[in-house]
Length: 179
Image (cartoon, rainbow, N blue to C red):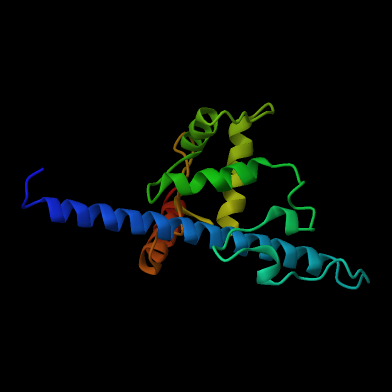
C-alpha cells in the first residue's frame, strides 16, 4: 500500500463498513415490519372475537433502540411456530441478490444450508413456495418457462420500478409466445 492510495483505500473501507451497518439496520426493520404485519393478519383473522390478548403491540414494546426485536416480549405465538419451507425460501431468496434464479438454484441453496425438502416431489414444493412469494410480491417472475425450460425469478427488493415493469412485461410476453 503506497501513500497515494492509502487514504482512498481507507475511505473505501469506511464506506463498506457504513453500508454493512445500514444493511443490518434495514434487515432489522424489515423483520420488524414482517412481525407487525403477521400480528395484524392474526388480529384481522380474529375480528369479531372478544379477546383482549390480541392487541397490537407498540414499536417500543417489541424492539430496542437499535431496532432489534426482543423475542421474549412477543406474545403472539409466532416465535414458537414451526418453520415452513416457504419461510426457509423467504430467508434464502435475498441471498441471490439481483441475479435471476430458478427452482434448481433454490434447491441447491437449501441443500447447501442443510435444509432437506421432504416429500415425493421436492421441486414441486419449491415451485409452489416460489409462486406464493411472487404473489406476496417478494419475488417477481422474470421469465415464464415451458416444458424443460424453468421459470426464472428475481428479488423485488433489488429492482427499480422500471425493472419490475420490464420484467413483468417480458414474462407475460414470453408466456403468450409459448402458448
